[in-house]
Image (cartoon, rainbow over all chains, first blue to last red; front, side, top):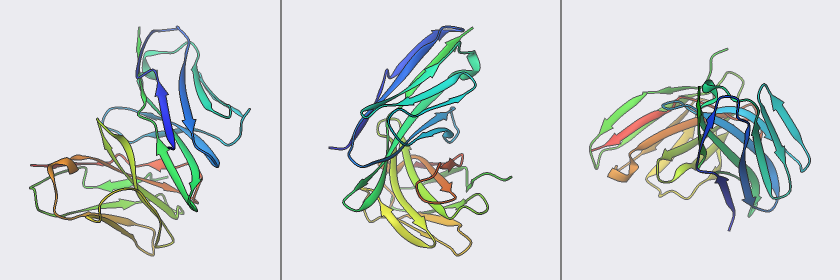
Length: 112
Length: 112
């Protein structure tokens, strides 16, 4: 079955304490992997798209990487304003249709 | 540049009623997708429209329907509302299918 699994479910960090979030997937025909950030009461905010294994993207304190089975979102020296839920989504072909499946997210809390 | 606009922001309906939600995509974006977000199931794909045609559909009952107009604006309709339909309904637009999606802030639907 096509699945997207994010871990951990929740993560608590001290300001400046770097860490990584994981998104593993079991789909065939990967078209793209997306990372989003979602704040309470708001829609997800687009962060990155990765298309092929080995690809990396960076934006401020965030860096996303992709392998054939998983993606990591590395957060370097996080700040309290990085607190949010981080979602990954995988786009793939299934029975001739393009599908986009989201993981359940990692809730990140960064304490000062 | 205006983002994705969803109206209304909040809605309370009674079981058995029907509801219509509206989404105005970013100017120039032709692809519009709808998602349901609940605490238990996370983000689940409802359907995608491109050039006024439904291109993809998730695993939701026929009570959930949508359409897209020639100006790319989209509406989603849910008939015979059930308590379990209470959720945040998110719309996302993209310049083309498979590119990064920009989400609106959502419509919070409560069914009582």
